[in-house]
Length: 177
Image (cartoon, rainbow, N blue to C red; front, top):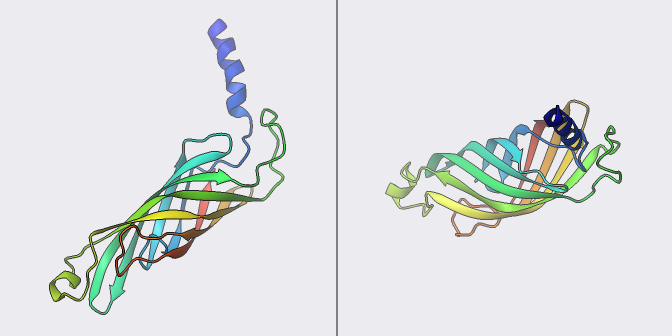
């Protein structure tokens, strides 16, 4: 009986609405940034704090240039901090009254290409297999009753200068709670 009472009392803090809308996962598309040309992405959030969470992203795209054609795989790990938290007590569950949430995100990302697909043998492309990049940007989330629409604007300078790397990018995604 004591164990049940402790479980019920501790579950009330889990049921309370946090200072932002939690995103379980999302699917979307990204152009430039950590993806050389573009990619279809999937992402999942984890490690929630009061005002922050971690996000992992993976993407699949393609690079098509006159002398270089290759599939491209991208990955990123970012830490997101909400810039406009709700002004209410987190222990009182209430429906959200703010529809747009703004986050600052920072982290690391990279893209991978098949360097043996034309460019290496012709000598016209000096692209490495792995190109790491830093990530800093803004994430906007439009929260509706069922879906979360995400717009990402990122500055992603490559840590190793390579011909296919880009410095800025944008992405859109649709997520769920």
